[in-house]
Image (cartoon, rainbow, N blue to C red; front, top):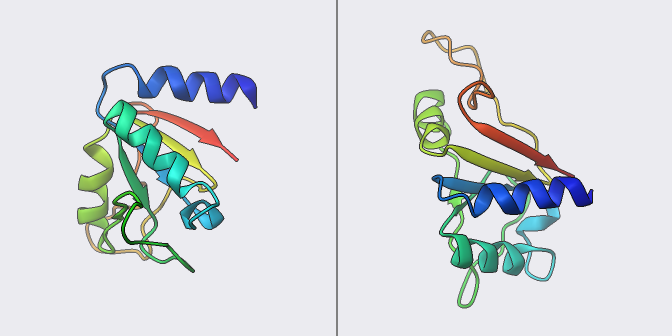
Length: 118
């Protein structure tokens, strides 16, 4: 875990357009959302979450969380804006259904630095 956290910290400080992709309880106040906000404030990265989630806390003092768009082309465009994405409590998202444009993978490990932290 320490090596993954070090890799994530180095990647977020690299100057690349970066994002933290947070899932699950990490979207709740007191469960990591504030920490993600502090990291985002320090590094300038975005915070992204799934389109469908059980709960996300919002309001004064909490960071802005970008909800991944539902339609695959829009979701792909959002994900491609980032050179580095650190996934915390989330898996790499995929498109919901087989649309005609054939998009299924929303992140490309050959073109983006993807770091998974569970």
